[in-house]
Amino acid sequence: MAVQRWDARLYDDRHSFVARHGDDLLGELAPRPGERILDAGCGTGELTAALADAGADVVGVDASPEMIDRARVRFPHLDLRVADVRELDVEPGFDAVLSNAVLHWIPEASAAASSMAAALRPGGRLVAELGGAGNIAAVRAAAHTLRAETGLPGAEEAWYFPGIDEYSGVLDAAGLKVTGAWLFDRPTRLEGEDGLAAWLRMFGAPLTAGAADPDDFIGRLTQRLRPVLHHTGGWWADYVRLRVSAAKPLG
Ligand code: BEZ
Image 1 (tube, rainbow, N blue to C red):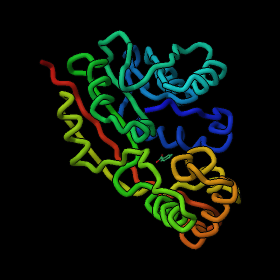
Image 2 (image 1 turned 45 degrees about the vertical axis):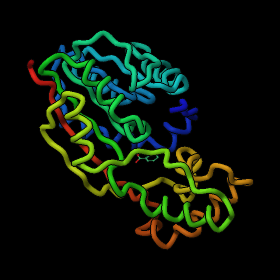
Image 3 (image 1 turned 120 degrees about the vertical axis):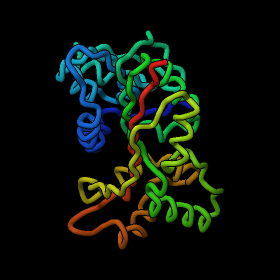
Image 4 (image 1 turned 135 degrees about the vertical axis):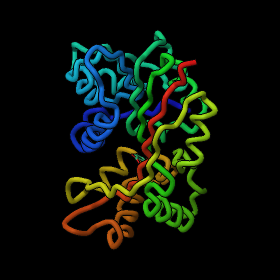
């Protein structure tokens, strides 16, 4: 996986809902004071800071130096490191690993799962949420159609959106015992009249790749998606989430 380049400020300014939805995950994880917790794919550090506020001894890692730079500015007191979730170079023995909205960027799911499992102590737990099967189906379908119509090759499937059985198999093979798994729709409001365009500019490179004029492509795509994704006062992303919790057996 090539390391994605991010505009970390745009991410915070327009896509703060990513971390906001992570609050639910914190509830699932139920961090306890003094626990060592790894935030795998911490972005600009919002959830890492929430874990620290809950009293955890936390390490946040992200493959993007831009995200870590911004996280360090926002939360200079936190232990934040540039690291790839597929090959975490951290001291093992974490009580828990949390991962929010990152694992769908990593098609090498087995490598990521093994690496997170290796970071856990026996008895440690993983709570993760990622895009699940059917995620952004309308956006992807419209982009594929528009690409074909404009003579562009099919978009590379850059994301990994598994279902429950598939991802449970990945975690099982990595030596983790799945204790809960949920696949659910989470239509997500995209702020502003240009909400979908802003989302596509931030995240949609795999869909717009090769377009001679990406802004024009995005304009046409949003026009097409308006009847489907613009309703009840604004733009909505057709998100589907896969949430899992798992534990590393005691041995
Ligand atoms: C997601 O959170 O589901 C997502 C974000 C960016 C690109 C694709 C999916």
